Length: 322
Image (cartoon, rainbow, N blue to C red; front, side):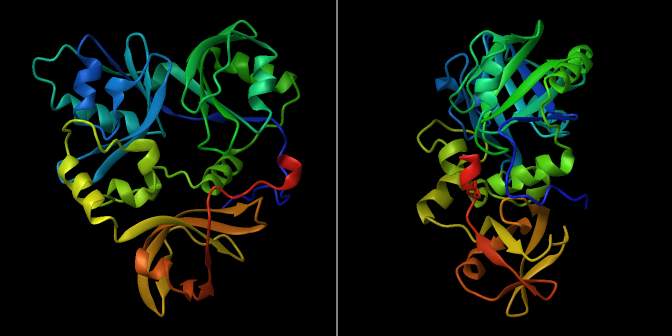
């Protein structure tokens, strides 16, 4: 695994390209109503320029995708990790019968960048034409050094972050502009470390039998009062029971745990490490994994014979970053 900076401090603003990030569009007069039938989020209540996280479950309630669902004047924009768009488009296309909705995988025509750090929004507001959004998953069209961009406020990579999406052919110009401004550039390992410290799951953390509530995004991605949708019966039943058998947690270790390693409690397998990094904020290894709840509440967790401990996410920033 490539190392990440060992210092607990991060710059007030940094940037990184987000290669291959998914952008799926749902347009047409029936787009919002149609999508509302397949996601845990109440997308019909979103105003243009607002957004929400949302799960797309299968008929058994297992998670097929977790994305940011953004309301636009034309319909909806699904922002997600690389590779999410084709599978989600295929899933939704299967149910289109007479609805006037078009699903477009715009990922190849777009390029995404991350602006990270507590001062990222102020930095961008000082040089952009247009209002920079601040509420989580609010989004707006602006211009950065005369480059048209769609900007989304997010916290998946730590507080104060922004997703900046531009046309693919404008990506080299924006990268050059960010470098010319003197902003530090993060590599992929640093981006992933920020994501893991934030406790934000990506597809690698979601196995085929993951249930929405296991990922700990209930308040952000699940509306328990909306109308029927695919997989709702399972989600509602879990809500009524009040618990799940597994939860996605962060585990601190002396060194980054191996992705794919088994987590044990008293020698018994209780989960698997799905993401791992060297945490700049903790100064030690940090991994994400779906772990049995009874093991989380107990003691003696180990990964490959080494002790690990559960830590809260998002990992708190040191005072110099506040």
